[in-house]
Amino acid sequence: MPSWIDFHTHILDSPALAVASLESQKAHVVRWLVNSIDLENYASFVQRSTDYPEAIVGLGWHPENVILLSEEKAPSVLKKYVPKLKSAPYLGETGLDFLYGKTDAQRALQKKVFARFIEWSLEHDKLIQVHTRHAKQEALDMLSDWRAEKVILHWFNGNKKQQELIIRNKWVCTVGPTILNSPHVDKFIDAQPLELLGLETDSPIPYDSVPSTPAYVARVASRVAEIKNVSIKDVAHAQQGIFSRFFPHLSLNSHAGK
Ligand SMILES: [Zn+2]
Image (cartoon, helix red, strand yellow):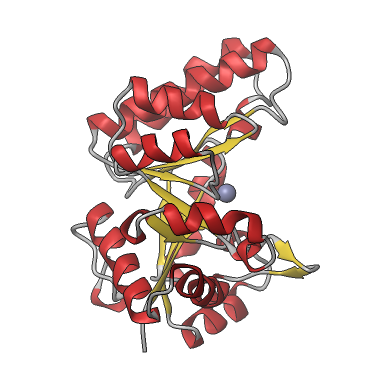
């Protein structure tokens, strides 16, 4: 039975976490990359993760949350991240969101914070999880300018030119349960090398009005195998390869210790 990783979730937010964990175990989803959206959320996730050894908690500041703050306050908040950088296993969620960031000032602030996260990921040689809603090209340009290395582009689907840049830089794109009903993404998935294609759920967000769990990764895997005309085993092997590339010191088996 193959083992799976949910490369992008917020499941520690779920009120039904114990059930989600059981479902996830049954589906052999053995690791969750749980993204935080601000410092407070990070602290609460780190605490909650002590009961869920499968969870690996990212240190993040979501672009939607960045703009809740005035520009003058951003530097002092960024300073508070610095002492946490060393112990955080990875950075995320960060990035740009121009659906919510509408004004020039909001977008500039998101870019300022995102740039610091990219810089930190390079300084500390850590994975960065990037959100790119309505700002795909801008986010790719920034990653490219900074020569970012260990990157996951969350829930990503782009044009041919963008995909070529991503592949050249060996950045990983993740896809989630929406691919089960969105044939327009098939072309992107087909062109993405298996070793640069991660699976995720963004759980607990609902699909068809049902809150999702990391267990959904198994279904996403089947669809990817179908689109790429490869075996489930090949898909699982690629997922494990991505995991060990980004977390060389962590075992896939969470019970063997973090
Ligand atoms: Zn997210």
